[in-house]
Length: 469
Ligand SMILES: [Zn+2]
Image (cartoon, rainbow, N blue to C red):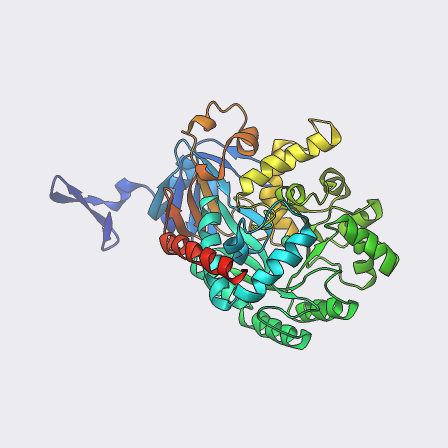
């Protein structure tokens, strides 16, 4: 309907038209860009409210209303409607730890120890193959896969993160991207000075970006000297940027730290002044009660990666104890090469719950609702982005996913959280909105050339295999 002269409206009926007074139409509706209409909203707000026949109104990149469909539709008029009737509507999933370009190494070498995988396969493969172009194609492939599985935000640690940021932004995804800093030459930078210089330019370039949070990623305590860790943290803090690091992943890391530093990895990092509310620590498996208290007190976020931890036999993270201590624990896929090998965060929800149950021999150890929290609002807290993402609430970014409920594995549904954690799959995600932009609609990707990314992945396979001969 078009308003004419503010007082009358032109209505087209059967090819004809006539004028009606504006007073007959009720109050004028506020214009928004998008309404996700109908469906069951799993808001993940503080009350964990679930709303049948709800709606989400989106203006620009943010949510302006969440409520019963009839109320939202009475107040707002949208340019675009996404019909969510019969579907679940959730905040987008948050993949708290991964290395997206490594999608091109998926399955290169599996079923070996972390040390053998790193030294015999990945380090040589990276030295010979990882270029900026490689990082771009790997990111595109990963973006396609992550969007398909309902992931709207991810945290990454790799090389050429500036190129990864450009590709991530082009795909319309939100991310915390950490440029890796290590004490040996990297594919993109050969010295510590060059790494810090690259990272500083990277942090400066993306300041204030709506989707990209540039970060520094000192790899771990076993690949970075004390000086490197402190330099990386100081640089990040100069720009109010996050710090991404692997912490307490293996038993060897713990025993080496005890021998070399006289304490645990967490307490060593605490001593160096690294831990804080801007740090995202991946794994946190080999952490004791004192470590957990420190992580909670410092408001350092942790990311649990059950597939990776099982595949590499790293150990079982004390997720239940971490949550009880007040640590924000998110979920991640890690990998995808050698330690997963995919980006399906719904699979991680399923495995996270089951891994705690079996390791404690207690089916109540970690439940369905808890792992959905870890994939959404707790992941947001771990990434220190809870003011922006993690739930469907007015004022937050419009990262919204629609999950279909018509597949055989989706019915019947007695409990929504159980269905999400144990029955539904990443492939049940149908539509994905990130920052108000529809990036997948009815399983059709709109921002990534998926066919090109798949073709390129096959090309890289031949190239990588040949390089290792
Ligand atoms: Zn990792």
